[in-house]
Figure (cartoon, rainbow, N blue to C red):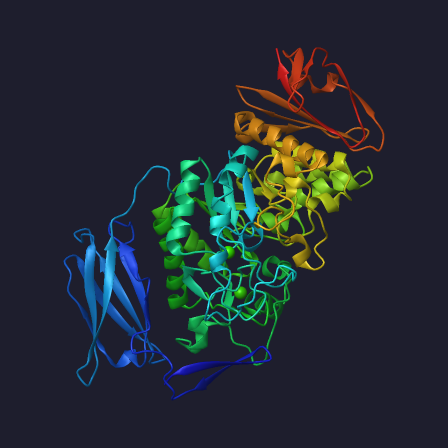
Length: 617
Ligand SMILES: [Ca+2]
Ligand SMILES: [Ca+2]
Protein backbone atom coordinates (compact mmCIF):
# COMPACT_ATOMS: atom_id res chain seq x y z
CA UNK A 1 0.00 0.00 0.00
CA UNK A 2 1.16 3.45 -0.74
CA UNK A 3 -0.10 6.45 1.18
CA UNK A 4 -0.53 9.58 -0.77
CA UNK A 5 -1.40 12.88 0.73
CA UNK A 6 -4.08 15.05 -0.73
CA UNK A 7 -4.62 18.50 0.63
CA UNK A 8 -7.98 20.04 0.03
CA UNK A 9 -8.65 23.37 1.68
CA UNK A 10 -6.15 22.47 4.37
CA UNK A 11 -7.80 19.14 5.16
CA UNK A 12 -5.21 16.40 5.11
CA UNK A 13 -6.31 13.11 3.61
CA UNK A 14 -4.55 9.88 2.94
CA UNK A 15 -5.43 8.00 -0.22
CA UNK A 16 -4.16 4.84 -1.82
CA UNK A 17 -2.36 5.30 -5.06
CA UNK A 18 -1.12 2.74 -7.55
CA UNK A 19 0.92 5.28 -9.44
CA UNK A 20 4.61 5.17 -8.79
CA UNK A 21 5.89 8.69 -9.19
CA UNK A 22 9.20 8.16 -7.49
CA UNK A 23 12.30 6.35 -8.71
CA UNK A 24 13.27 2.90 -7.49
CA UNK A 25 15.65 4.46 -4.98
CA UNK A 26 14.80 8.12 -4.38
CA UNK A 27 16.81 8.94 -1.30
CA UNK A 28 18.52 7.75 1.87
CA UNK A 29 18.76 10.10 4.86
CA UNK A 30 21.03 10.91 6.50
CA UNK A 31 23.14 10.12 3.43
CA UNK A 32 26.31 10.21 5.51
CA UNK A 33 27.30 9.90 9.13
CA UNK A 34 30.44 9.95 11.25
CA UNK A 35 32.60 7.47 13.08
CA UNK A 36 33.29 8.12 16.73
CA UNK A 37 29.94 9.63 17.75
CA UNK A 38 28.95 8.99 21.38
CA UNK A 39 25.71 7.37 20.23
CA UNK A 40 26.73 4.53 17.88
CA UNK A 41 23.20 4.13 16.51
CA UNK A 42 21.74 5.81 13.46
CA UNK A 43 18.43 5.12 11.72
CA UNK A 44 18.26 5.63 7.97
CA UNK A 45 15.04 6.47 6.16
CA UNK A 46 14.99 4.93 2.69
CA UNK A 47 12.48 6.19 0.13
CA UNK A 48 11.97 4.44 -3.19
CA UNK A 49 9.25 2.83 -5.26
CA UNK A 50 8.17 -0.34 -3.46
CA UNK A 51 11.52 -0.43 -1.68
CA UNK A 52 9.97 -2.45 1.13
CA UNK A 53 9.92 -5.51 -1.14
CA UNK A 54 13.71 -5.65 -1.22
CA UNK A 55 16.17 -7.54 0.96
CA UNK A 56 18.75 -5.23 2.49
CA UNK A 57 22.40 -6.03 3.15
CA UNK A 58 25.72 -4.31 3.74
CA UNK A 59 29.26 -5.38 4.49
CA UNK A 60 31.66 -3.02 6.22
CA UNK A 61 33.99 -3.60 9.13
CA UNK A 62 32.53 -2.20 12.32
CA UNK A 63 29.08 -1.42 10.88
CA UNK A 64 26.12 -3.67 11.66
CA UNK A 65 22.68 -3.57 10.15
CA UNK A 66 20.71 -4.40 13.29
CA UNK A 67 17.13 -3.99 12.04
CA UNK A 68 15.08 -3.36 8.91
CA UNK A 69 11.68 -1.83 9.63
CA UNK A 70 8.79 -2.02 7.19
CA UNK A 71 6.01 0.51 7.72
CA UNK A 72 2.54 1.15 6.27
CA UNK A 73 3.86 2.65 3.05
CA UNK A 74 5.82 0.20 0.87
CA UNK A 75 7.87 3.07 -0.47
CA UNK A 76 9.78 3.25 2.80
CA UNK A 77 12.25 1.25 4.83
CA UNK A 78 13.89 2.29 8.06
CA UNK A 79 17.31 0.78 8.67
CA UNK A 80 18.98 0.66 12.07
CA UNK A 81 22.76 0.81 11.89
CA UNK A 82 25.25 0.32 14.67
CA UNK A 83 28.49 2.14 13.93
CA UNK A 84 30.84 0.50 16.39
CA UNK A 85 34.18 1.79 17.69
CA UNK A 86 36.05 -0.33 15.17
CA UNK A 87 34.43 1.37 12.13
CA UNK A 88 36.82 3.50 10.09
CA UNK A 89 35.93 6.45 7.85
CA UNK A 90 35.13 5.30 4.33
CA UNK A 91 32.35 4.23 1.99
CA UNK A 92 30.26 1.13 1.69
CA UNK A 93 27.36 -0.04 -0.39
CA UNK A 94 23.91 -0.66 1.02
CA UNK A 95 22.30 -3.24 -1.28
CA UNK A 96 18.57 -3.58 -1.90
CA UNK A 97 17.78 -6.86 -3.68
CA UNK A 98 14.36 -6.87 -5.34
CA UNK A 99 12.29 -10.10 -5.56
CA UNK A 100 12.91 -10.26 -9.33
CA UNK A 101 16.64 -10.20 -8.75
CA UNK A 102 17.39 -6.56 -9.53
CA UNK A 103 19.85 -5.03 -7.03
CA UNK A 104 19.82 -1.35 -6.17
CA UNK A 105 22.72 0.14 -4.31
CA UNK A 106 23.43 3.26 -2.29
CA UNK A 107 26.94 4.47 -1.51
CA UNK A 108 26.98 5.28 2.18
CA UNK A 109 29.67 7.57 3.56
CA UNK A 110 31.19 7.45 7.01
CA UNK A 111 33.26 10.55 7.70
CA UNK A 112 35.96 11.47 10.14
CA UNK A 113 34.77 14.01 12.73
CA UNK A 114 36.29 17.49 12.58
CA UNK A 115 37.42 18.31 16.11
CA UNK A 116 38.72 21.85 15.41
CA UNK A 117 38.42 23.86 18.63
CA UNK A 118 36.42 26.71 17.12
CA UNK A 119 33.50 24.47 16.11
CA UNK A 120 30.34 24.09 18.24
CA UNK A 121 31.52 26.59 20.82
CA UNK A 122 28.16 27.49 22.32
CA UNK A 123 26.54 30.94 22.36
CA UNK A 124 26.45 32.43 25.85
CA UNK A 125 25.96 35.66 27.76
CA UNK A 126 29.40 36.69 26.49
CA UNK A 127 27.83 37.08 23.04
CA UNK A 128 25.71 39.53 21.13
CA UNK A 129 23.47 37.84 18.55
CA UNK A 130 22.46 39.53 15.29
CA UNK A 131 19.35 38.06 13.65
CA UNK A 132 19.16 38.06 9.85
CA UNK A 133 16.50 36.98 7.35
CA UNK A 134 18.73 35.72 4.53
CA UNK A 135 16.25 36.68 1.77
CA UNK A 136 16.19 40.29 2.95
CA UNK A 137 19.77 41.16 3.98
CA UNK A 138 21.98 41.14 0.92
CA UNK A 139 22.08 39.57 -2.53
CA UNK A 140 25.64 38.34 -2.96
CA UNK A 141 24.85 36.02 -5.87
CA UNK A 142 22.20 37.18 -8.36
CA UNK A 143 22.71 33.91 -10.32
CA UNK A 144 20.83 31.94 -7.63
CA UNK A 145 17.83 34.30 -7.32
CA UNK A 146 15.57 32.08 -9.37
CA UNK A 147 16.05 28.32 -9.58
CA UNK A 148 14.46 26.25 -12.33
CA UNK A 149 12.13 23.56 -11.02
CA UNK A 150 11.25 25.30 -7.79
CA UNK A 151 7.62 26.08 -7.08
CA UNK A 152 8.19 29.80 -6.60
CA UNK A 153 10.30 31.11 -9.45
CA UNK A 154 9.59 34.80 -9.25
CA UNK A 155 11.83 37.35 -7.59
CA UNK A 156 10.00 40.56 -6.87
CA UNK A 157 11.51 43.09 -4.51
CA UNK A 158 8.33 45.18 -4.71
CA UNK A 159 6.32 42.48 -2.96
CA UNK A 160 6.65 41.82 0.76
CA UNK A 161 5.58 38.21 0.18
CA UNK A 162 7.86 37.30 -2.72
CA UNK A 163 11.50 36.32 -2.69
CA UNK A 164 13.98 39.17 -2.93
CA UNK A 165 17.16 37.31 -3.80
CA UNK A 166 19.17 37.74 -0.60
CA UNK A 167 21.47 34.84 0.17
CA UNK A 168 24.31 33.37 2.21
CA UNK A 169 26.98 34.94 -0.01
CA UNK A 170 25.42 38.32 0.76
CA UNK A 171 25.87 37.67 4.47
CA UNK A 172 29.44 36.45 3.98
CA UNK A 173 30.17 39.71 2.15
CA UNK A 174 29.14 41.71 5.23
CA UNK A 175 30.73 39.77 8.06
CA UNK A 176 33.27 42.59 8.43
CA UNK A 177 30.39 45.03 8.95
CA UNK A 178 28.95 42.84 11.71
CA UNK A 179 32.33 42.36 13.35
CA UNK A 180 32.84 46.14 13.36
CA UNK A 181 29.43 46.66 14.95
CA UNK A 182 30.47 44.45 17.86
CA UNK A 183 28.27 41.48 17.05
CA UNK A 184 29.70 38.09 18.09
CA UNK A 185 27.06 35.67 16.82
CA UNK A 186 24.82 35.49 13.76
CA UNK A 187 21.40 33.84 13.77
CA UNK A 188 19.78 33.23 10.38
CA UNK A 189 16.09 32.42 10.06
CA UNK A 190 15.94 28.89 8.54
CA UNK A 191 18.11 28.62 5.47
CA UNK A 192 17.17 25.05 4.50
CA UNK A 193 14.91 24.39 1.54
CA UNK A 194 11.39 25.88 1.59
CA UNK A 195 10.00 24.85 -1.79
CA UNK A 196 6.47 26.11 -1.26
CA UNK A 197 4.47 27.82 -4.02
CA UNK A 198 4.31 31.15 -2.19
CA UNK A 199 5.55 33.23 0.73
CA UNK A 200 8.07 30.78 2.15
CA UNK A 201 10.98 33.25 2.05
CA UNK A 202 10.86 33.25 5.88
CA UNK A 203 12.09 29.66 5.97
CA UNK A 204 9.64 28.13 8.43
CA UNK A 205 7.98 25.75 5.91
CA UNK A 206 10.77 23.24 5.44
CA UNK A 207 10.56 20.90 2.46
CA UNK A 208 14.01 19.25 2.66
CA UNK A 209 15.81 18.91 5.98
CA UNK A 210 19.21 18.12 4.53
CA UNK A 211 19.51 20.82 1.90
CA UNK A 212 20.24 24.53 2.03
CA UNK A 213 17.65 26.32 -0.11
CA UNK A 214 19.31 26.68 -3.55
CA UNK A 215 18.25 30.32 -3.58
CA UNK A 216 20.44 30.90 -0.54
CA UNK A 217 23.34 28.74 -1.71
CA UNK A 218 24.57 25.20 -1.21
CA UNK A 219 25.37 23.03 1.80
CA UNK A 220 29.05 23.62 1.05
CA UNK A 221 28.55 27.39 1.02
CA UNK A 222 26.74 27.25 4.36
CA UNK A 223 29.66 25.32 5.81
CA UNK A 224 32.03 27.91 4.36
CA UNK A 225 29.91 30.66 5.92
CA UNK A 226 30.23 29.03 9.35
CA UNK A 227 33.99 28.62 8.89
CA UNK A 228 34.39 32.26 7.83
CA UNK A 229 32.37 33.36 10.86
CA UNK A 230 34.56 31.28 13.15
CA UNK A 231 37.73 32.66 11.58
CA UNK A 232 36.48 36.17 12.42
CA UNK A 233 35.50 35.26 15.98
CA UNK A 234 31.78 35.15 15.17
CA UNK A 235 29.53 32.25 16.13
CA UNK A 236 26.52 30.85 14.27
CA UNK A 237 23.04 30.03 15.56
CA UNK A 238 20.94 27.68 13.44
CA UNK A 239 17.16 28.06 13.54
CA UNK A 240 15.24 24.75 13.79
CA UNK A 241 11.58 23.93 13.43
CA UNK A 242 10.60 20.70 15.17
CA UNK A 243 6.89 21.37 15.23
CA UNK A 244 5.93 21.44 11.57
CA UNK A 245 7.08 21.17 7.99
CA UNK A 246 5.83 22.61 4.71
CA UNK A 247 3.09 20.53 3.07
CA UNK A 248 5.30 20.31 -0.02
CA UNK A 249 7.89 18.38 1.98
CA UNK A 250 8.82 15.18 0.13
CA UNK A 251 7.91 12.99 3.12
CA UNK A 252 4.52 14.68 3.46
CA UNK A 253 3.64 14.23 -0.21
CA UNK A 254 4.24 10.48 0.19
CA UNK A 255 3.99 9.76 3.91
CA UNK A 256 5.66 6.75 5.54
CA UNK A 257 2.59 6.17 7.69
CA UNK A 258 -0.62 7.86 8.70
CA UNK A 259 0.73 8.70 12.17
CA UNK A 260 3.66 10.70 10.71
CA UNK A 261 1.70 13.92 11.27
CA UNK A 262 -1.18 14.86 13.55
CA UNK A 263 -4.37 13.98 11.71
CA UNK A 264 -7.73 15.63 12.30
CA UNK A 265 -11.13 14.83 10.78
CA UNK A 266 -11.07 18.34 9.38
CA UNK A 267 -8.44 21.04 9.34
CA UNK A 268 -7.80 22.08 12.93
CA UNK A 269 -5.59 25.01 13.74
CA UNK A 270 -3.70 25.28 17.02
CA UNK A 271 -5.44 27.59 19.50
CA UNK A 272 -2.01 29.21 20.15
CA UNK A 273 -2.71 29.17 23.92
CA UNK A 274 0.42 27.96 25.69
CA UNK A 275 -1.47 28.25 29.00
CA UNK A 276 -3.43 25.09 28.11
CA UNK A 277 -0.16 23.13 28.29
CA UNK A 278 0.52 24.07 31.94
CA UNK A 279 -2.93 24.97 33.31
CA UNK A 280 -3.91 22.58 36.17
CA UNK A 281 -7.54 23.26 35.23
CA UNK A 282 -7.07 22.82 31.50
CA UNK A 283 -9.46 20.98 29.25
CA UNK A 284 -7.55 18.01 27.73
CA UNK A 285 -9.08 18.91 24.36
CA UNK A 286 -7.77 22.48 24.60
CA UNK A 287 -4.33 21.07 25.31
CA UNK A 288 -4.55 18.62 22.43
CA UNK A 289 -5.58 21.35 20.02
CA UNK A 290 -2.74 23.57 21.26
CA UNK A 291 -0.15 20.83 20.73
CA UNK A 292 -1.51 18.81 17.80
CA UNK A 293 -3.42 21.48 15.91
CA UNK A 294 -1.69 22.83 12.84
CA UNK A 295 0.11 26.14 12.83
CA UNK A 296 -1.13 26.93 9.37
CA UNK A 297 -2.76 25.19 6.37
CA UNK A 298 0.63 24.80 4.75
CA UNK A 299 2.48 23.66 7.85
CA UNK A 300 1.85 19.99 8.70
CA UNK A 301 2.12 19.30 12.45
CA UNK A 302 4.61 16.48 13.00
CA UNK A 303 3.72 13.67 15.39
CA UNK A 304 6.66 13.80 17.78
CA UNK A 305 5.38 10.69 19.59
CA UNK A 306 6.20 8.64 16.53
CA UNK A 307 9.66 7.09 17.14
CA UNK A 308 10.58 7.32 13.44
CA UNK A 309 9.78 11.05 13.42
CA UNK A 310 11.81 11.45 16.61
CA UNK A 311 14.85 9.75 15.11
CA UNK A 312 14.50 11.66 11.87
CA UNK A 313 14.48 15.09 13.51
CA UNK A 314 17.08 14.43 16.19
CA UNK A 315 19.56 12.93 13.74
CA UNK A 316 19.03 15.72 11.25
CA UNK A 317 19.87 18.33 13.86
CA UNK A 318 22.96 16.44 15.03
CA UNK A 319 23.94 16.02 11.38
CA UNK A 320 23.95 19.80 10.89
CA UNK A 321 26.05 20.42 14.00
CA UNK A 322 28.60 17.87 12.93
CA UNK A 323 28.54 18.84 9.25
CA UNK A 324 28.79 22.61 9.63
CA UNK A 325 30.12 23.12 13.17
CA UNK A 326 27.36 25.56 14.20
CA UNK A 327 27.42 26.88 17.78
CA UNK A 328 23.81 26.99 18.90
CA UNK A 329 20.20 26.25 18.02
CA UNK A 330 17.17 28.48 18.26
CA UNK A 331 14.02 26.33 18.44
CA UNK A 332 10.99 27.74 16.68
CA UNK A 333 7.47 27.55 18.20
CA UNK A 334 8.81 25.72 21.25
CA UNK A 335 5.56 25.42 23.30
CA UNK A 336 3.76 23.62 20.43
CA UNK A 337 6.05 20.59 20.60
CA UNK A 338 5.71 17.39 22.58
CA UNK A 339 7.47 18.13 25.88
CA UNK A 340 8.82 14.63 26.55
CA UNK A 341 10.28 14.37 23.08
CA UNK A 342 11.90 17.81 23.30
CA UNK A 343 13.56 16.90 26.61
CA UNK A 344 14.85 13.66 25.12
CA UNK A 345 16.05 15.57 22.05
CA UNK A 346 17.97 18.08 24.20
CA UNK A 347 19.58 15.28 26.23
CA UNK A 348 20.81 13.63 23.04
CA UNK A 349 22.20 16.86 21.57
CA UNK A 350 23.94 17.77 24.83
CA UNK A 351 25.35 14.23 25.18
CA UNK A 352 27.18 14.69 21.86
CA UNK A 353 28.01 18.40 22.33
CA UNK A 354 28.23 19.47 25.99
CA UNK A 355 29.09 23.10 25.12
CA UNK A 356 26.31 23.56 22.61
CA UNK A 357 23.68 26.27 23.26
CA UNK A 358 19.95 25.93 22.83
CA UNK A 359 17.19 28.48 23.30
CA UNK A 360 13.50 28.07 22.58
CA UNK A 361 11.09 30.61 21.13
CA UNK A 362 8.44 31.22 23.78
CA UNK A 363 6.15 34.03 22.75
CA UNK A 364 4.11 33.87 25.95
CA UNK A 365 2.56 36.37 28.32
CA UNK A 366 4.01 35.95 31.81
CA UNK A 367 7.30 35.09 33.49
CA UNK A 368 5.75 31.95 34.97
CA UNK A 369 4.51 30.73 31.56
CA UNK A 370 7.93 31.43 30.14
CA UNK A 371 9.96 29.89 32.96
CA UNK A 372 7.74 26.78 32.75
CA UNK A 373 9.52 25.76 29.55
CA UNK A 374 13.06 26.10 30.92
CA UNK A 375 15.36 23.53 32.41
CA UNK A 376 15.24 23.04 36.19
CA UNK A 377 12.80 25.90 36.82
CA UNK A 378 10.90 26.29 40.07
CA UNK A 379 7.38 26.36 38.62
CA UNK A 380 7.12 23.29 36.40
CA UNK A 381 7.21 20.72 39.18
CA UNK A 382 8.28 17.21 38.41
CA UNK A 383 9.28 17.58 34.78
CA UNK A 384 12.60 18.80 33.45
CA UNK A 385 12.39 20.19 29.93
CA UNK A 386 16.20 20.21 29.50
CA UNK A 387 15.80 23.52 27.63
CA UNK A 388 18.62 25.82 28.82
CA UNK A 389 17.07 29.15 27.80
CA UNK A 390 14.19 30.90 26.06
CA UNK A 391 13.60 34.05 24.05
CA UNK A 392 12.74 36.41 26.90
CA UNK A 393 9.55 38.13 25.74
CA UNK A 394 8.89 39.36 29.28
CA UNK A 395 12.05 41.46 29.37
CA UNK A 396 11.24 42.80 25.90
CA UNK A 397 7.74 43.89 26.95
CA UNK A 398 9.02 45.27 30.25
CA UNK A 399 11.65 47.43 28.52
CA UNK A 400 8.95 48.77 26.18
CA UNK A 401 6.75 49.54 29.21
CA UNK A 402 9.65 51.23 31.01
CA UNK A 403 10.18 53.44 27.97
CA UNK A 404 6.58 54.15 26.96
CA UNK A 405 4.53 53.60 30.13
CA UNK A 406 3.56 55.96 32.92
CA UNK A 407 5.17 55.45 36.30
CA UNK A 408 2.96 53.50 38.71
CA UNK A 409 3.15 50.80 41.39
CA UNK A 410 3.42 48.07 38.73
CA UNK A 411 3.79 50.23 35.62
CA UNK A 412 6.52 52.17 33.86
CA UNK A 413 10.00 51.33 35.18
CA UNK A 414 8.46 49.22 37.95
CA UNK A 415 7.46 46.66 35.32
CA UNK A 416 11.07 46.03 34.37
CA UNK A 417 12.11 45.92 38.01
CA UNK A 418 9.45 43.37 38.91
CA UNK A 419 9.99 41.18 35.85
CA UNK A 420 13.68 40.91 36.76
CA UNK A 421 12.75 40.17 40.37
CA UNK A 422 10.88 37.12 39.07
CA UNK A 423 14.14 35.56 37.92
CA UNK A 424 13.77 33.32 40.98
CA UNK A 425 11.67 31.07 38.74
CA UNK A 426 14.63 30.16 36.55
CA UNK A 427 17.48 27.80 37.26
CA UNK A 428 19.67 30.25 35.33
CA UNK A 429 18.09 33.32 33.69
CA UNK A 430 21.41 34.29 32.09
CA UNK A 431 20.78 31.59 29.48
CA UNK A 432 17.76 33.52 28.21
CA UNK A 433 18.02 35.53 25.02
CA UNK A 434 16.98 39.15 25.61
CA UNK A 435 15.83 41.30 22.72
CA UNK A 436 13.84 44.37 21.72
CA UNK A 437 12.42 43.06 18.45
CA UNK A 438 12.67 40.30 15.87
CA UNK A 439 11.23 39.21 12.53
CA UNK A 440 7.77 38.50 14.01
CA UNK A 441 7.15 41.79 15.77
CA UNK A 442 7.17 45.54 15.35
CA UNK A 443 10.59 47.09 14.97
CA UNK A 444 11.90 48.66 18.13
CA UNK A 445 12.38 52.15 16.69
CA UNK A 446 8.65 52.16 15.84
CA UNK A 447 7.71 50.72 19.25
CA UNK A 448 9.21 53.88 20.80
CA UNK A 449 7.49 55.99 18.12
CA UNK A 450 10.85 57.01 16.63
CA UNK A 451 11.90 58.77 19.82
CA UNK A 452 15.69 58.73 19.51
CA UNK A 453 16.36 59.10 23.24
CA UNK A 454 14.10 56.17 24.02
CA UNK A 455 15.76 54.19 21.23
CA UNK A 456 19.17 54.72 22.81
CA UNK A 457 17.85 53.89 26.27
CA UNK A 458 16.38 50.64 24.98
CA UNK A 459 19.68 49.69 23.41
CA UNK A 460 21.55 50.57 26.60
CA UNK A 461 19.17 48.45 28.70
CA UNK A 462 19.45 45.58 26.22
CA UNK A 463 23.24 45.60 26.15
CA UNK A 464 23.62 45.81 29.93
CA UNK A 465 20.87 43.32 30.79
CA UNK A 466 21.52 39.82 32.12
CA UNK A 467 21.29 37.10 29.49
CA UNK A 468 22.30 36.85 25.86
CA UNK A 469 21.38 40.06 24.01
CA UNK A 470 20.00 39.75 20.48
CA UNK A 471 19.45 42.50 17.92
CA UNK A 472 17.55 42.34 14.65
CA UNK A 473 19.18 43.35 11.37
CA UNK A 474 18.71 47.03 10.67
CA UNK A 475 18.11 48.08 14.30
CA UNK A 476 21.44 49.85 14.07
CA UNK A 477 20.31 51.99 11.13
CA UNK A 478 16.92 52.79 12.63
CA UNK A 479 14.86 50.55 10.36
CA UNK A 480 11.25 50.93 11.37
CA UNK A 481 7.64 49.74 10.90
CA UNK A 482 4.95 47.97 12.82
CA UNK A 483 4.43 44.29 12.00
CA UNK A 484 1.14 44.71 10.25
CA UNK A 485 1.74 42.71 8.13
CA UNK A 486 5.00 40.95 9.01
CA UNK A 487 6.56 41.88 5.69
CA UNK A 488 6.87 45.48 6.82
CA UNK A 489 9.44 44.49 9.44
CA UNK A 490 11.32 42.35 6.94
CA UNK A 491 12.36 45.01 4.45
CA UNK A 492 15.62 44.78 2.54
CA UNK A 493 18.73 46.17 4.17
CA UNK A 494 19.56 49.25 2.05
CA UNK A 495 22.80 48.60 0.21
CA UNK A 496 22.41 44.85 0.20
CA UNK A 497 21.58 44.86 -3.53
CA UNK A 498 23.98 46.23 -6.14
CA UNK A 499 21.32 48.50 -7.64
CA UNK A 500 20.28 50.03 -4.31
CA UNK A 501 20.37 53.82 -4.30
CA UNK A 502 21.63 53.95 -0.74
CA UNK A 503 24.24 51.81 0.98
CA UNK A 504 23.80 51.90 4.73
CA UNK A 505 26.54 49.35 5.27
CA UNK A 506 28.92 52.32 5.04
CA UNK A 507 29.10 55.44 7.21
CA UNK A 508 28.93 57.53 4.05
CA UNK A 509 25.63 55.97 3.03
CA UNK A 510 23.99 56.58 6.40
CA UNK A 511 22.38 59.82 7.56
CA UNK A 512 23.86 61.65 10.57
CA UNK A 513 21.16 60.21 12.81
CA UNK A 514 21.68 56.69 11.49
CA UNK A 515 25.40 57.05 12.10
CA UNK A 516 24.68 58.22 15.61
CA UNK A 517 22.54 55.13 16.21
CA UNK A 518 25.14 52.86 14.64
CA UNK A 519 27.99 54.42 16.63
CA UNK A 520 26.00 54.29 19.87
CA UNK A 521 25.35 50.54 19.47
CA UNK A 522 28.90 49.89 18.29
CA UNK A 523 30.35 51.67 21.32
CA UNK A 524 28.17 49.78 23.78
CA UNK A 525 28.53 46.44 22.00
CA UNK A 526 32.30 46.67 21.91
CA UNK A 527 32.41 47.82 25.52
CA UNK A 528 30.26 44.84 26.47
CA UNK A 529 32.56 42.56 24.50
CA UNK A 530 35.46 43.61 26.72
CA UNK A 531 33.62 43.87 30.03
CA UNK A 532 33.00 40.62 31.86
CA UNK A 533 30.81 42.46 34.38
CA UNK A 534 28.21 42.95 31.61
CA UNK A 535 28.54 39.36 30.41
CA UNK A 536 28.90 37.05 33.37
CA UNK A 537 28.79 39.60 36.21
CA UNK A 538 26.09 39.72 38.83
CA UNK A 539 23.11 42.05 38.60
CA UNK A 540 21.80 44.06 41.55
CA UNK A 541 18.76 46.25 41.04
CA UNK A 542 17.15 48.83 43.32
CA UNK A 543 13.48 49.57 43.77
CA UNK A 544 12.75 52.45 41.39
CA UNK A 545 12.10 55.79 43.06
CA UNK A 546 10.40 58.78 41.46
CA UNK A 547 10.49 57.05 38.07
CA UNK A 548 14.25 56.49 38.13
CA UNK A 549 15.56 52.95 37.86
CA UNK A 550 19.11 51.95 38.84
CA UNK A 551 20.93 48.64 38.54
CA UNK A 552 24.51 47.47 38.67
CA UNK A 553 26.41 44.78 36.82
CA UNK A 554 29.57 43.83 38.62
CA UNK A 555 32.33 41.32 39.15
CA UNK A 556 35.83 41.42 40.61
CA UNK A 557 37.07 43.37 37.55
CA UNK A 558 34.53 46.16 37.16
CA UNK A 559 31.33 47.71 38.45
CA UNK A 560 28.96 49.21 35.88
CA UNK A 561 26.10 51.44 37.01
CA UNK A 562 23.05 51.83 34.77
CA UNK A 563 20.59 54.67 35.44
CA UNK A 564 17.39 55.11 33.47
CA UNK A 565 15.10 58.10 33.95
CA UNK A 566 11.57 57.01 33.00
CA UNK A 567 10.15 60.51 33.51
CA UNK A 568 9.18 63.01 30.85
CA UNK A 569 11.42 65.57 32.52
CA UNK A 570 15.00 65.57 33.84
CA UNK A 571 15.55 63.88 37.19
CA UNK A 572 18.01 64.45 40.02
CA UNK A 573 19.47 61.30 41.50
CA UNK A 574 21.29 61.21 44.83
CA UNK A 575 23.37 58.08 45.02
CA UNK A 576 23.59 57.63 48.82
CA UNK A 577 21.23 54.66 48.87
CA UNK A 578 23.43 52.64 46.49
CA UNK A 579 26.37 52.50 48.89
CA UNK A 580 26.29 48.68 48.87
CA UNK A 581 27.61 48.82 45.33
CA UNK A 582 29.26 52.24 45.21
CA UNK A 583 31.38 52.10 48.36
CA UNK A 584 35.03 52.59 47.50
CA UNK A 585 34.30 54.24 44.16
CA UNK A 586 34.84 57.98 43.77
CA UNK A 587 34.62 58.73 40.07
CA UNK A 588 33.19 57.24 36.90
CA UNK A 589 33.63 57.04 33.15
CA UNK A 590 30.62 57.55 30.90
CA UNK A 591 30.91 54.48 28.69
CA UNK A 592 29.28 56.15 25.69
CA UNK A 593 31.07 59.49 25.69
CA UNK A 594 34.24 58.43 27.51
CA UNK A 595 33.77 61.51 29.69
CA UNK A 596 35.41 61.39 33.12
CA UNK A 597 32.98 62.17 35.95
CA UNK A 598 34.62 63.39 39.15
CA UNK A 599 31.50 63.64 41.30
CA UNK A 600 29.27 60.56 41.53
CA UNK A 601 27.20 61.70 44.52
CA UNK A 602 24.50 63.24 42.37
CA UNK A 603 23.44 62.98 38.74
CA UNK A 604 21.01 64.90 36.57
CA UNK A 605 19.52 62.55 33.99
CA UNK A 606 17.60 63.94 31.01
CA UNK A 607 14.06 62.68 30.37
CA UNK A 608 13.94 59.06 29.14
CA UNK A 609 17.74 58.90 28.97
CA UNK A 610 20.01 56.13 30.21
CA UNK A 611 23.51 56.55 31.62
CA UNK A 612 26.00 53.71 31.60
CA UNK A 613 28.86 54.48 33.99
CA UNK A 614 31.90 52.42 34.78
CA UNK A 615 32.75 53.23 38.39
CA UNK A 616 36.34 54.07 39.27
CA UNK A 617 38.23 54.17 42.55
CA1 LIG B 1 20.75 35.75 -4.73
CA1 LIG C 1 2.57 20.45 17.45
